Length: 419
Image (cartoon, rainbow, N blue to C red; front, side, top):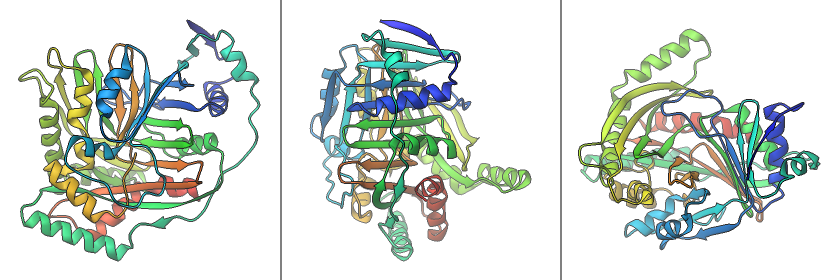
């Protein structure tokens, strides 16, 4: 049953806040926002899925097959964690894990709220859902986060980058995405207000906020992993970062510097080649094209270099195969993919878990949209542990201190939220 409800005396933001507080009383929800940011092929649809008719919560083994079985022309929402790599290749994940997320969790919702300009369209069997949401009285609470502990010291980080540069010189790989983790304890917390604060500090076209029982994802992601719209497949890897300037002239200079950086363009080009290869596995012959190369896009905290690769889905190919054959995304691994994932496991000392996986939704038609789970906070509400990770692409030309500083620029919004 679909019904339209005007916002009436509430603004869109107020209705969203109220709906999230009600959603947080349920076992599962998934919010997706584009924050009205202009983006090639658009950002996420703005919608909130609440409640779970069916849940698929699994570790690596046969997740992609389970996903095919679960879909059955219904909406699905959730995330696919990085460690599903172990299902796709002969790999393992033995590093420390501070938040303990399952490798994948997706659910078929009971209610979906589509946010529009003047109101919401509600898909639900419950006719008084909006009234129930508006009558809900949230308990006032604030968030307090304990200090963050880094997984590596700056000195260790620099020595690891030098070791990775040696691997590149030895011909083991061309580029590797190397990440570091920060973790701590939640002293008190209001999940909804924390997400809304993060989204205010750092609005992004692929923002999402998910609850899977005790597991929460608060994401300010600027990056699309892969989208299906009809037979068109779209992937938009990000490689290349500069901070925002303190003045308009400095800001413009940093954008120009990014656009003309041979190092950043080389990184971006390597990942574009990897994405083209990944998409070709499920594409109609000759349909893989680079629609935009080295596009510069500005967000609240950073400028990013983004390329857009498109293809056409091969006939008789299941749409889940597109996700599976491109997973995990090249921008968060490197090239060649399997070798760099082995090196990631060796040099990173924490498990990635949901981080650098993908969060999104699948429509009843089989169209879908998934972000890259970066710039995201992961909270286990049962153990009160939180974690976030940041990384950068290491090539032979990488300067370890600059890569370390780039990580801190990317983590700026999360540090601001936690403090």
